[in-house]
Image 1 (cartoon, helix red, strand yellow):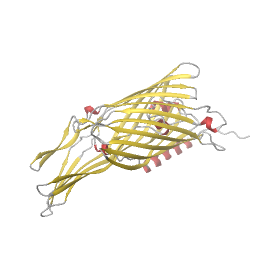
Image 2 (cartoon, rainbow, N blue to C red):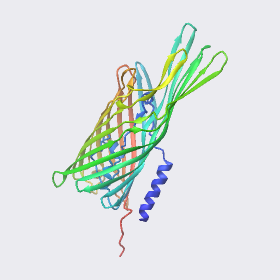
Image 3 (cartoon, rainbow, N blue to C red):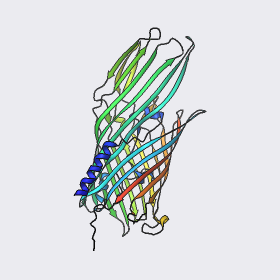
Image 4 (cartoon, rainbow, N blue to C red):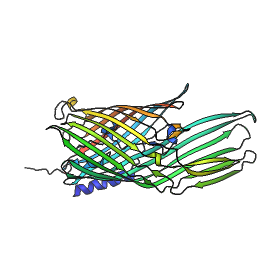
Length: 430
């Protein structure tokens, strides 16, 4: 019981003090709610983000809360990670390189009682981060208008989850998350002449919740082989957020500023999300998984400022700005011999790939599609008292592209540590 209380105290300190924001520098994060993150941690990232059907007693898998029921009864598992990335953006003959990254996630899990496991942590939901400029020449007044597009912020989630094994092959679970954060976007004009300038600031602060409901069914195929079906559903709902639009017009002749603030009540929704995956496992040597996810963004309306001319406009909810998102991931992990005394035989070798369709439209056309491949390693940490902790390192290449739009190539390094300790073992001293 004392160990359990220590775990809960550590959970509280971690989730209050941490802020999971993996970062982005993509102009595409100005659309929708930004660049959407997934609930992957160290081992999943090395396998292309796959995980709905994975259930192991020595790791945390927040992708499917039903997996918590498999946690080892003697251990407390704590997993934290960060990511670093460099992105090359290309438009026509123009190129730009940028870097970003930072803290990514922190999660933990422990067993509460027989067949019942608990998990907790903090994960990113979406990220907003970009800055770029456009120029327009106005020959009639001999002026050049420069427009600055800038965005920052994002949304995070602190979650608490439970997983319970109903019968031997069937487990269910849920994650309940508090979702919070602020996303801000701005469009500001400046001029080389006496031309009025305009600034538009779009800001949304969110304080809401998310719910994930998971199921896993394990079908033994032989003594060493098994197949696991995983299903996760996240209900869509209105977050109660009140987005606002602030428009400031500065008159060049007098320097006078006129501002208008528009606000919409209860205008931001989260979509229904459905996920399913299959995982094959051969003893402690090999596991292979494939996942599919759909997010129903096509049913979600978004706020948009509509310029009606003559200095007038309106801030209103519009449909048709977003579309359903589809994601497919595949991945595998191979361990030569988990019980070997040789170091390289105990290393976990991982590989994965994935494909994602956009969830927003740009200029009445589809946004960029995403392709990614990953390669990772689970490196055992060997010392005199612990052979269970693992250093997870993975490299990921991601490409986003669409016709007549900016093309992005991102190389990302993910580093995570799965701290696995036998806190609940009873030691016998002679």
